[in-house]
Image (cartoon, rainbow, N blue to C red; front, side):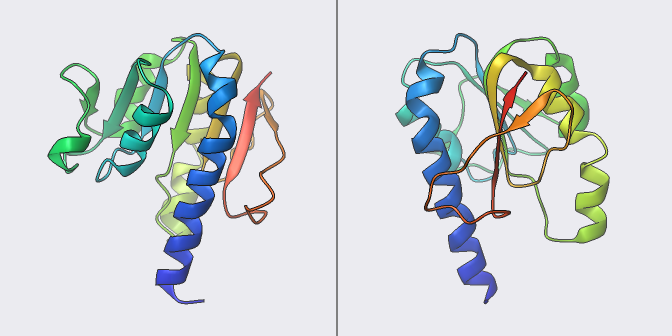
Length: 159
């Protein structure tokens, strides 16, 4: 599969999962965390699907399109591992992380801290969506929408 096709599949899976869980997230109190703002497309999608919900985004640098930038105070810049750590215990309704690189060694290093962080920021019953698998005893794997191939994207509920 070409890298372009892989990219399209990843973004389609991301969109399909976020659309599938949006109604449920609307009924869970708490902010939404976007780990990896990137160019802001997913942030913009979440903002459209969850109007009025506070969405806090994290990234190393601000590279999003001007129309997809979070309001002041809702974008934290720096190493996500460090900046998001301050939000452990916030009781997020949803935490989304699309910070995989497709480099096995880099992703393996990310997986030494990401599962614990995701479990820590979510409230009980909150949802986690991730491009990387999150093996953690407090995160229960959930079924994916039929349109999403297994191991393309991952969905969990905080126990």
